[in-house]
Length: 335
Image (cartoon, rainbow, N blue to C red; front, side, top):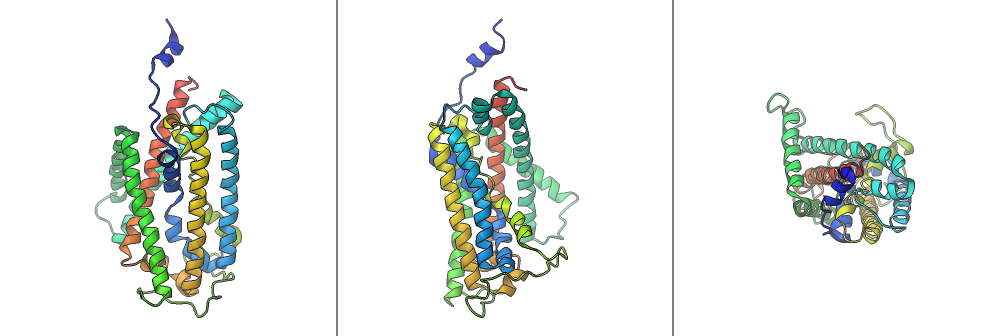
């Protein structure tokens, strides 16, 4: 009787098929880019102004950047096993720390997939129906369940299919960002005139803060509130490291891919802040929560679809990463 050791030796290792681009960079990019870019960042610019909004992005990114640098130092310090952060912690801090943190990280990633799915359903109702629409009893929950089963079926089919489908979702999201940016430039040039969007009186209108009471909450936001509101849009940096079991060279791919995704998304956030601040009136930024969709060229549905695909794509990445993590913990016999 060889016990668990023989079983572990007999189990075939996962095929290492992904490099930096498809294994780390694109999953991280998809997990970081989310609905806050489309729904909350314009409002943050209207409240805090371009200077403080840039400071919000810089502070949030500095947090994830330091985390990535620490993870990169550990990942390049030796052999990285499967399980991403769990594997890195296991080789550096031992099974006690790695097992307890790994289980919590698995639960958080799994619950995040549920949150993303429900967010996608809400985005569907907000952009294509109305928030008050009721198709049938418990319609949002039932649609969310079917949505989750569909994403789970893609994950069950294999990581190869996850990579293909997630690439389609990411292309749609990046297309939405492109057409939103193009629409903003055309609006500033006077070529595109979307409904419900006003131009600023001068270029400095959104330079400084203009804190206004939020009608939805009745609260007057401040810098700390906006910092907390934006912070979730820089998370998701573990999406690539979660796939360490199927990476050809984890020690090289994890640092390069994660840092590349952080750099790309930071550029997109800062570009959006200054484009919106210089091109759109403060009144519009504060009052129109869907201004990012309205200003998109040639139609607002371009961004509406991008919002939905950003939540679906992030949910797919969470569902793809969580089983990899749980498998690594279980294979080591720590649960």
